[in-house]
Image (cartoon, rainbow, N blue to C red):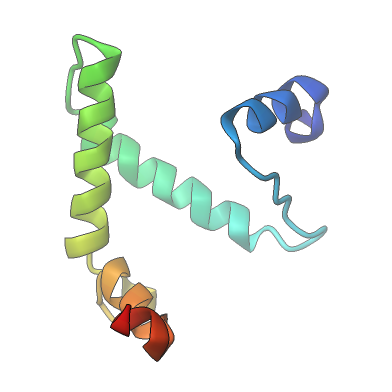
Length: 96
């Protein structure tokens, strides 16, 4: 597949990203990623115009913060991702 291609794997290594392929016959993780990309396109990339890559980078960072802090996710009981992450932190991590 294209995700296992040498060129793609080399780009991941260059960017410092660890490859984590989905399990065979278990596409749920890919579905979550695809749904997020759709949300990103519908709420940012298809409605805004960016003059420079730097403008796009800033918009992506702002969208990340907006999504993590305010987006209500049904599967999380209509709570934002930041709340879920905070609830999953061990007590020692919160105290630090």
